[in-house]
Image (cartoon, rainbow, N blue to C red; front, side):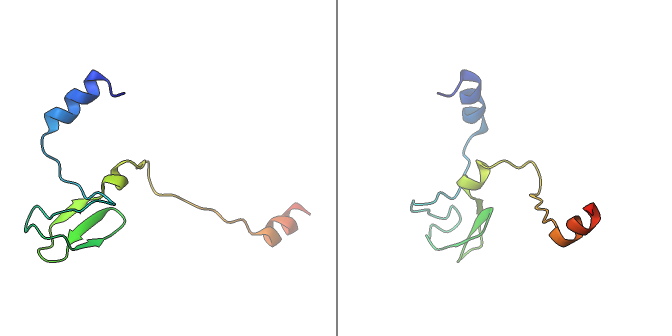
Length: 80
């Protein structure tokens, strides 16, 4: 359940258009429903109006994900 402070922040922000998966999304620019979907935004295929993805805004944006792969042969030789 959202707190009163959260509700005040959301209602004070006003209209915020986002692209929602599994829904029919009409472009606020031209009214059409054809979209090019990316990782963070959706772009209208006709007028190029861009909307952020609603699902992308729910993810953490703490920075880039870094994956380190260890070199097993190098680590084994170094340990010996």
